[in-house]
Amino acid sequence: MKTKFLLFVLLYTQFCTSQDGILLNTPDATNGYSLFSTSGSTYLVDNCGEIVKTWPVYSPTRHCKLLPDGNLIYMTSSTITELNWNNQVVNSVQLNELGLVLEYEVVKLKNGNYLCVAREEVSLQRFQEYGYDIPNTFPTQSDVVVELDGNSGKVVWRWNLLDHVIQDKFPAKKAYGVIKDHPEKININAIATFDWEFTESFMINGMDYNEDLDQIVLSVRKVCEIVIIDHSTTTEQAKGSTGGKYNKGGDLLYRYGNPANYKRATPNDQQLYFQHNPNWIKYGEHKDKIMVFNNLLSKESYSTVQIIDPPIRPDGSYTLENDQPYMPLTPAVEYGATQNKVKIWSGYTSGAKVLPNGNIVITEGRTAKIYEIDPDGNVLWNYAVPLSGYLFRSERYSHDYPAFIGKQLTPMGNVESPPSNYACSLYSSTDETADENKVIFKQYSDLINISSSIDFDMRAYNLQGQLLSSLQSQNQQIDWVHNLSDQIVILQIIMGNQITSKKVFIY
Image (cartoon, rainbow, N blue to C red; front, side, top):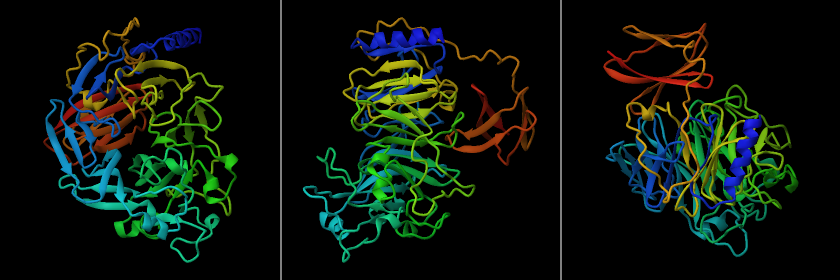
């Protein structure tokens, strides 16, 4: 604890400078790499801020991500592109639908298609037909989610938020009803007028996809809520209130952050303010809960990172008591509040995600800083992105991330000039128990046997980054039975904080 306290003091000493680049690197930080866009390029840097890879791509508000196969994925308002490690275009699809613009987020699905946030041109008159009545505002875009064919770019699935609104002002207009009785709908007149210099309406600014549940979580900035919708519907079902795995059509399955919007709580119960980057947690003690960056808290000059524990049933639906708001009313865990060690603030952009070792990476967009903290809130790593007025988001990857297998990751200088004066050293991530927890692989014609001295999880990926199998060991063993032949797979073995990757040719 003394060491962590000294490191925390050192970090705040660094805050007193305007230095760019690496500000803090500790032995407890993830041994890995960070990805961000700045100054016309996208960079992958090591824990000391040295560049190990550069792509000639700048995507400030539609941030780049590194797929497990090593491809960089990014999008413009009309195109989704994947570049391989040699900066060659391996796939590029063009959205060719008039009146539709891609925004903020793209997720590559297992079937090779792309799930995207988008905006659709809509007349002000159409908003007014749904009872829209917010003075001196003139929205001309509705928020949608689309799935694009991975080869043609054709829209194969669509969900439009405007199909799932309610209003209680005009009985003769569309979507009229009792708001309290319809928590599955969004009040079209609950849209905040905060920063209304744009033409968007609800402003979906972030998204994540849960393959197991076939659900999508969305950040709806201007109603200060995150919502969950069903992806298993057809496009026609997504327009209505029936159909799909959960028989709710495109209506909301769950929502959190501002229950006063559907009149089942008071404004004092609001938890989220203009949030970003909701995502399902994949690792650690809070696995399967949802993390979100909460941007601007009322009457306070700080932001927080929240972990939310939705009341999910075994079938993937969510409990809701009569006349009550969706639970919980408050987060299970909150970082950045006054009692926590890490202090963050950004009125816009930003994000947070749990890493495989249980630590948390935080992007503070307003200052273009990236933090890694441990589950107790201690800051373990801190980097200030150079030449960047703000940062929409960053990504951070463990050195064992499948994208890095067989790749050259030689440090070749810093992004900033002059380089940071922080005395940085790289630390090995080798677990002390690695030798005694050796993993043994035995390959047969139709299965691979994996064993170790402790229980472990296994994930198998193909070279396109698609998850082929995810298994948990029984009695320290896994028999992965497959029907594959003549291809390379990447096996990822997770034992606590230790992650081992192995490339296997299946003959």
